[in-house]
Length: 106
Length: 121
Image (cartoon, chains in turn blue, cyan):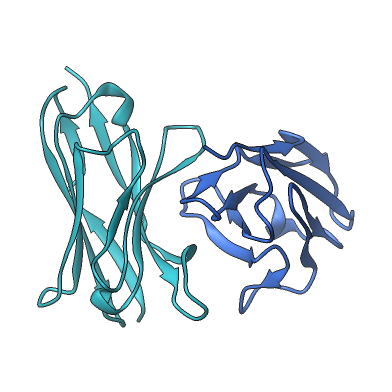
């Protein structure tokens, strides 16, 4: 099984900050990686797929990069609506999610 | 409106069975990749099962042999039959649609609101 490890688990930040979340795969997954945002009591929402492709309707302040085993999700200027939990997901071999990164208000 | 609505969750005793339904509107379930994903209370996400447009099905090892994914074209509904339920199957179960363009079944572009399944005596 491919394991996905996100860091940090919690990230305190302020509105306007630029933040970066890292996701590492236990083996190379090429660019078969997606990022999701989840708010409490809601279903996850797709942000990025194939490591860097922005899903339609997602603000351009979100960006993804990486390939192989190391990936990042960046938010260029945090907005109040961005405080949520973020998950990475590999889909090279079936699907595995990371454990999540909670973006907290500092 | 394009949406997914899950029903069928509830409290069930260990060893019991339950069937979840996921009614789709605005698109055809049979023409899309459809998945079930679950989330332990307060914890992370786990992919459970997928059904391809051609009918092929795949399962996570943790549910293989116990869960069955299926669909009904006439009702435009996805199902998850869950047998031999265990306490560790307790979770919110989401149905979700995969990205058809480019052929990415596990890139989940549309999710339902979730159905809570609690396995407890």
